Image (cartoon, rainbow, N blue to C red; front, top):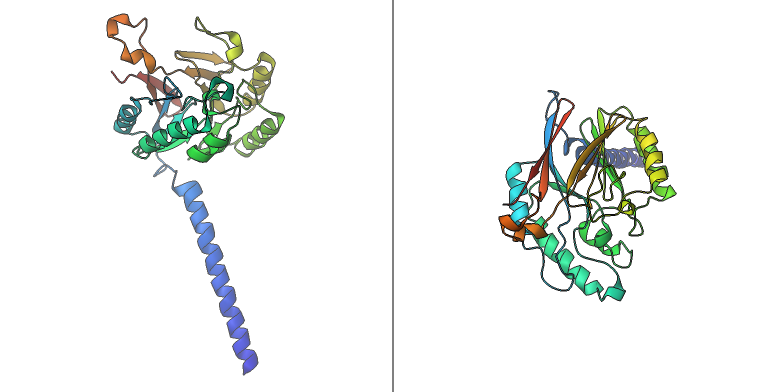
Length: 294
């Protein structure tokens, strides 16, 4: 009799353990797939938004007063997600007088605004988001890894950290990760790559030097890797203007954002600037529309 009770108790424990395991697997699948998945099998159409360069004019006081307005505009566009291409705050070096307290204050201000953002936010680390080339504050406050990837149905998105030390570069360790990630997602309909620094200097605006993009040999090596997979576009920020170039079937887009010029009267502006972009994907066709907060 005692043996029977022990046996049934054992079976009960196994059943509970299996139920827990099943629940965990279900939750993981929900978070990885269902939470960020198109609702049906109809032709894929979706929208996301891009912004960047939202740093305050001074690291020592104030904030980007337009951030809250930006959030309202982004919400009104109804994108699935928003990706920030870096330079979220105004960091730098301690020898410039910038302290940890300066950076933390700015990140807290950003977080207070981001809480009001309805779509999911993905971020890319820029050189201004660091203090003495350390990513610690960015990682802590933004809750994103320095490089990572995510899926939206048959679309795979890769976020690269190409300013690991505050200058345009990618470590071999990250390249190894990238190669594995591309291979795992080689059968996706499309792959989008996001980074802070532009890969190529197709259209270097006046006032910027060519060293503000990836080193040519490294950029070419990564491009050779991209063309072996269904990479459709590589989107970067850092700059304040827009450019779009096709290289071997891959679109290299610089979605530059500019916030300081919007304070000037219209007649004093030398060019029309964008504060964010709306990207529509319809049946493989990518449409990018610049938006202003004016």
